[in-house]
Structure formats: structure tokens, C-alpha cells
Length: 80
Image (cartoon, rainbow, N blue to C red; front, side, top):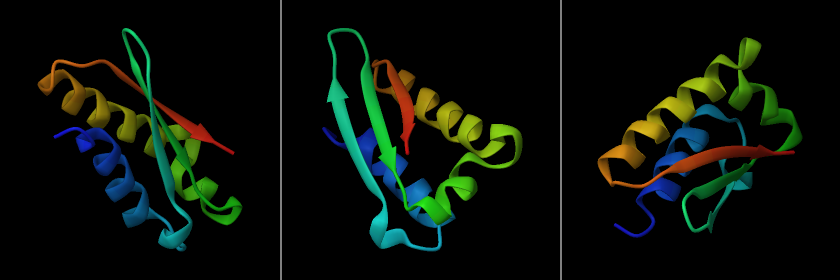
């Protein structure tokens, strides 16, 4: 259960990109909020963000729902 949010983001990202082997997800736990950092290859950045940020917003919504269920707060950061 410890890495559930990280695994969720990793699964979503790998499902979207052309180079799933280059997907890196790390968790940075703060006092109040956990920051989930997502790194993908440069070519796949557009696929993860989507048109007008729609895909990224959807991923954040899913992560938010999962976090709420686990009684946690989390934020998705897409790192270039």
C-alpha cells in the first residue's frame, strides 16, 4: 500500500507513452502533501501533457481521487 500512488502514476504514464522504459516516477513525502514526480522522454512529454493540458489534468484528478481514498494529499509534478 506504501507505493500505491507512485504505482498508479507509473501505470498511467506507461500506458500513454511510446517509450515506457524511460518512465520514472518518484515520491517526495512532505509533512502535509506527497509530491509525485513524473519524468518521461522528451518525445513523450506531449503525450503525457495532452492538448491544452487535458491528459495531465485527468491524471491529476485520478491521483487526487486515489489520494483521498487513502486519506492523503498528493500533487503530480511533470518534470522535464
